[in-house]
Image (tube, rainbow, N blue to C red):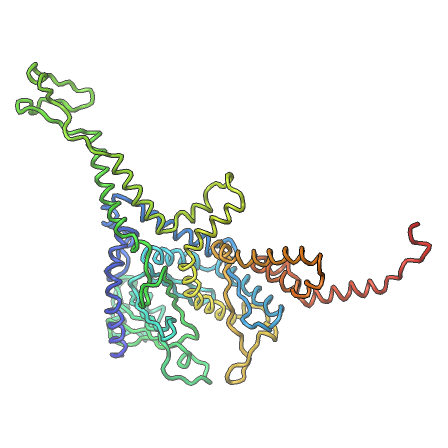
Length: 525
């Protein structure tokens, strides 16, 4: 266990450069999430009181909401699982698609979207978000957002995250429910037995998930699963639970890659000088506005206390003071318009970094734009976002595979066809993990080029087939139609299985052959 703690401290030290930036960015982008050793402090966050410009805060909230609306919308089928086997046939593809629809319903019934929004706020605001995927005691899916700064992680030689450690706290009541009273250390049991309220007091734990160094693959139990899971009491310096996972239960998603480290680069980091400048300029403009509303007054020494600055107030002056022009406004000639121009430039740079123009394209009125113009603008703006979306798809894949595996083991899916069963190294039949095809608005725009390519090819083929009908032999029209329909997100229920299509065609052909040809006297004159 001492080696485990040394690994944790080593990864925590390697995370230190990100920690300082996360604390800085929280101040300007997520002021309601001031972080401490015990987690987030949301009540009376002092950082929010010192912000003079909230452009970055609003942009972060909008882009996180845009992730929810245009990448993982809860009211749409935002992903589909696809068969990874190229020769498995349409029956296998249809089975994976039906599993996708079941999984979407299971996600909607769980706390997935609530936890995911919190994860997206960290992904957008701090560059790195994390989510836990497991199941409740009743078998339902369970998700938990892990705050940025509460975990450390490491990647393997292929760039996949395979080691995850997070520090967290439990009340004595929570610890007993999770691990059992007998598994707790002396301090944990003492708090539970001696305290009048089991919800008072805090126990610190460390959860470690990492590849298991040695295991017997033929034994299907917690101690021989691919990933080792250890819950360690930091207060009592002892392990309180050791088990395992078949899949990595934690997911880490980055907005953009930041060098070779496992953590991400936030858009606010790219425009940090502009965010600071916007704060400064807004304070200056507030001061200019205050001076314009309550101008400085220059008065003679003998007029001290005699100038009435109240609304409708009257000030009596002698002829000498009047000839000198006292009292009068003083030093109120600031250029408010110049300051506003500079502030707009900084705010626009912040908005572009958070891809607000892309989001506004989908939310604003489009009556004055043609469909071609809308598509052209969508292609242009979404392509700028494609590096972040591509990284999201890569980071999210292990989570989607775990959701698939959990639901399959719980028997939530229909019986799989034989074409998707593949023998493992021991000869036992197993299910291939699916490929994930995203169906959200961003994914649709990025796949539009592929769909448009199919449409253009068929249009060109239609025109050329008039000159030579043999050109149709180059295209499998059945497969092309089914592929185009799935690219466009068509529900699987409305597509007949290929077996049913073939049966329908054979029946139609048989009916045609049984119909006698018309007699000569029946032909029209």
